Image: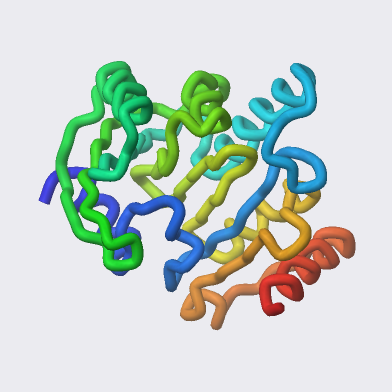
Length: 219
């Protein structure tokens, strides 16, 4: 196994690093935030785009930690189009991402190769990548904290995040519950074994936001 694969499987032994499938992963402390109003995918103007970038960074820093050693992860698959392939090549070169772990994913019916590189998370240090993801020029790019296994996976107007414990996830939710998606697009999952001993308290508005997400997810 390469170094990234070893680290990933140490924290997430039963999950492949396919970002858009993390929602279905078992044993994770995982939730989603959406950074534009009304569940919109596109920013209405420059100010809203600036706010989107700020929110990407705020949630990523809360998830990963400022100055934290991380893996930057990108996937390559046979179904990518030429534009995505060219963009990915530039990203691989800029961040020194090297090929390693290859696997077949039965849910997608696709083979993937992981390209990963060691980076340090810095607020506003990856805004160009966020813009490419927002513009759907890249997808399934993720960061994983090397020491905790926490994952930040941005999508075109938000992010899925994971934390090592339920308490850590609740701490993030307490900070950003106003950005939890409405209309059934959100989710909150906890590691069932860890929840057996977890104890936490949240404010009434945070509890109400959590309940809305849980109720919508059950429908």
